[in-house]
Every structure is written in C-alpha cells, then in structure tokens.
Length: 213
Figure 1 (cartoon, rainbow, N blue to C red):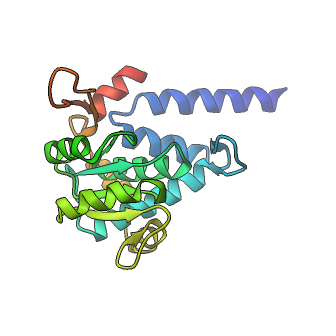
Figure 2 (figure 1 turned 135 degrees about the horizontal axis):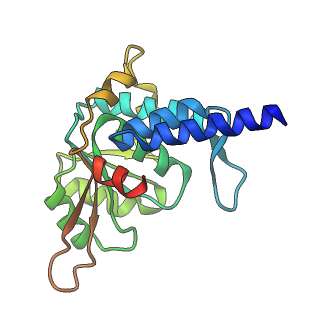
C-alpha cells in the first residue's frame, strides 16, 4: 500500500511538472524521460507498440537526421501518412527541434496538396508507399523538397530508417529542446478550402501547452 501511494505521488508530481513546462517539446522530453518503460503508443489492429523510451529514442534519431539534412528550428516539414506509429515518431522528432510538422490530407489531389506546400514552404516531405505517386509528383513539381519514405523507398530516395541512422552521435537533444521557445510554430492545420484556397491555422508550442494544462 505504501509503495502504491509513493508511485501515485511520484506520477502526480511528474504530471504537474510536465504541465508546467513552457513548450510541448520540453513537456514531451520530461514525460518520456520519467516514463521510459511505460507503453506510450499501440498500433491499431496490430501488435506494434512503443514505450516512451522507444518513442523518445526514435524521435531523437529523427531529429538528428533532420538536422543532418539541414533542417533547422523554425523550418517546416510536410507529412503525407496514414495513422501509424511512425507518424508520431516523426511529429515529435520535428517538435524537439522546434520544427513545425504539418499533415497533408491523404485523400486530397496533388493540386490541393501543392497549395499547402506552396503556402507552408516545407523543406522535407515524409510519405509512405500507398501515397508514393502523389508524394513523388509533389517533389517533381517542387524539386527543393527532400522526400523521405517510411516504406517503399525507391532508388535515390531516403528511407526513414536511413534518416534515423544518419543521426549524429553527438546530438544534444536537451540543448535542442531548451532552444525551443513558446512562440515557435508547432504545426499548421489547413482548412477545407470551401471558400477559397485552404488556409493554414497556426498553432504555437506555448499555445498548445496552455490548452492542455
């Protein structure tokens, strides 16, 4: 009984400390560090799962891989994915760098996706095999985009595994997280565009922390 109370107290303290953080990046780092062995994510309809420790480590490697590509705090990356564990890994990897990741509607035609890309000006596009045709067309139309494929990478394309493997050993993720400011852009959510071109609604790190605390 005493052990249970102590565990509950510790978890309550961790929750309070997490919610007191000024950014989503710092909140995730604190929460994941304090819950390394707990299951954080499960793949719907499959056995795949990630503990908080796994999630943090893979997202750290994504952050380092993005840095190796030249992605910097304040940049944007586009994500054209289904609901899968890798989405969360990539999203948090960007967040830890102060990079805004935003979703492209995976049912939208290239023309609409291009409006979003031109508006947000991402440096990287992350996609998967089932959306490869549209992803490659976007890259063909906007050659400055670097394509990363979670699966089904073709010759000359970067796979997610290769991106993670390119993370430098010396990356200091805590320093990267500490550099993230509450006013830094966290994500963009695009409207449906029923009255004109889709508009990107901006969500900042501190704003989301205020919403959840």
